[in-house]
Each structure stands twice: as structure tokens, then as C-alpha cells.
Image (cartoon, rainbow over all chains, first blue to last red; front, side, top):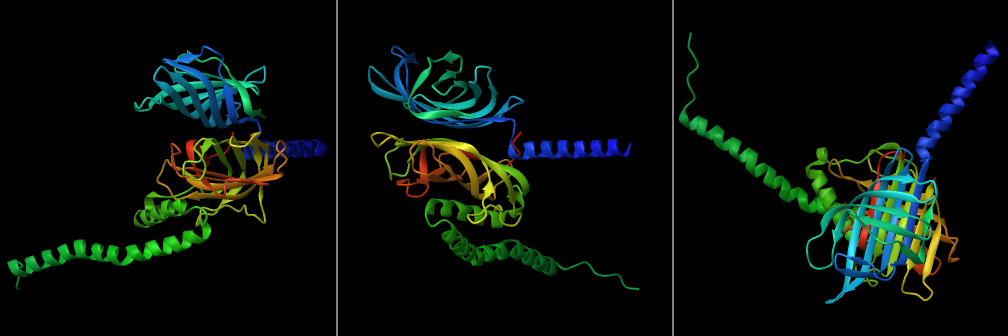
Length: 156
Length: 230
């Protein structure tokens, strides 16, 4: 009986210690970091801007309960008949999940600057990121996948 | 038995004047005498800590002054917590390098203890706190582009600035090992001066790749998170 009690107390101690450690060091989370440049496929158009390439930076922590925190920044470079145009999306990430194929989808609210002199607007956004690129959804518009050219995207 | 007489009009006027002087002149005198002194103390205090970031010193001097006037409304998280900092964006917005010439994305988090009197953690250069996370950084101006990529292993500085409720500001320095460019150990220093990041800063040193201290973001955001990671 004494041995059973000892084993029970020991197991309880180990479980409590492990759980506390996991909470404190952030185990059970997935981090997504990335920086670099990417390219859109030919013919990509968003709000009248023909997009060619992009620049991005992101640092996000996705939790197992579907919550997430972090930052996503994406400049979409392109042109209009009037000349070059850059669209800037700055997003605060609030939710996310690790997908079965190893990609990560995250989203939140963003400030979208169309680069045409009009004030930036607040729009929901989401991103599905892999190590090869990222697919951005602005509002209800899904843009073609941006394929990584330089830099990297790490999912851990 | 005699009853006390009603106060005369002159006596009443005298007390009203004393009251007015008390509530107007005294606070003005206090401001005139204390404000310049507080400013000098704050600048001197911050100068030693932020020599490389004068703009940070100015911001924090304002924090100090307003904090001295309304200390009850400004505070920072304290105690043991999982300190976390995340960021994604570009530098430099301060003219040192071309805007968007360098991209970054990072996550760094680790257990820290925040001192309730200073807002600073127990993590130091000599005694760093174990940390996890990752860094991606690209210098787009070189050919080939320099890509620094590696895990975060240590936090050497973690500090919250006093802020009103609902806000978080602070500065963090973390280290790790690059596995991509061969520059060795990277040291990243970031400052979150509020949302949405227009006044935030990012700096990196890794071998010969350096931003020469913290540089203003030209886009994106850095966030210091006080809560425990789930």
C-alpha cells in the first residue's frame, strides 16, 4: 500500500512538473518565422494592380487551442497603367493552426495600404505558409501562391 | 452663554483666497521646479542604457515624465512569466540604409523574472536566460543576398517600459546560432515602442553583417508579449 502511494505521489509530481514546464517554456506551440522575397505567377491582379513580386517578414506563435500571436508583413509589388505600385499589408495575428500537411494557416486583422494615396483600411486576412511560399487571403480574395525566391520560411 | 458669531465677509474672502492660491500656485511652482530636474535625471539615466538609440531615450524620457505625473496609471508586468517577443517587417526607416533593404521575422521566448521596481528581467549578458524561437533575416543589398537563419537559444535582456493599462512596450535582446550564412552567433536587439510599429526598432549583429545598432522599422511590427505562452 505504501509502495502504491509512493508511486502515485511520484507520478503526480512528475506530471505536475512536466505540465508546468510545458506551460512556462511554451511547449505545444508552433512557431513560424520568415523573411525574404517571393514571386507571383504571371497574370496576378489585385484591385487593378498587376502583381509581380513581394517582400515579407513574419514571426508568429501558433498554439494548439487555435489561438496565435505575432506579426505578418507583406509588401506586394506591381504596376498599374500609371506606373509602379506597392500594396502594403501589416497584420496582427490572432488565430492559427498547424495543418496535417505540415503547413500553417494563421490570420487576424490587417492594415491594408493600397499605395494609391488613400488611407489604409482595416481588413481581415489569413495566410497559409509552407517552406516554399505563402498564400495570402485579403478579405475574401485569395491571391495566387507567392513562391519563395530569397530568404526562408521556417515552421517549427 | 455666548454663541459664536458668524464669520465676517472679510474673513470668508481671506479663506477663499488662501484656497485659490493653494490649488493653483502650488502645483504650478511644483511643476516649474520639478519638471526640468526630472527631465535631466531621466535623460542622464537613459543615456547610459541607450547610447546607441537616442530616439528610444527620448521616448522613454517622455514615459518617465508622464509616469512621474501619473504613476498610478502606468505599470508593467512583474514576476515570473514566459517572456515572448515576435516581429516581422523591414528596416531601415531612419535613413541609415535604404528602406526595405533588410527583411526580418523572428520569435523568441523564454522564462523570465521581471523585477517590480525596474521592469527589467534577471536575464543578463553574463547570465542569460534559456530561450527558444527562430530568426530569419535577409540583407537584400548584397549579391548574393545574406540570409541569416537559426534557432534562438538565449535571452540576454528583457525589459518592460511603464505603460498605461492595455499597452505593452519594452526592449529585448536575444542570441542564437546561424546555420545559413556562416556568420556564427547572432545577437538581435529589438524595441517595441507601441502599436502598430511605426516607432519600433530592430538591430542585428552576426559576424560582418551588422545594422550598426537598432534601426527604425520601415514597415511591419515588433511586439513584446507579457503573457504566458500556451
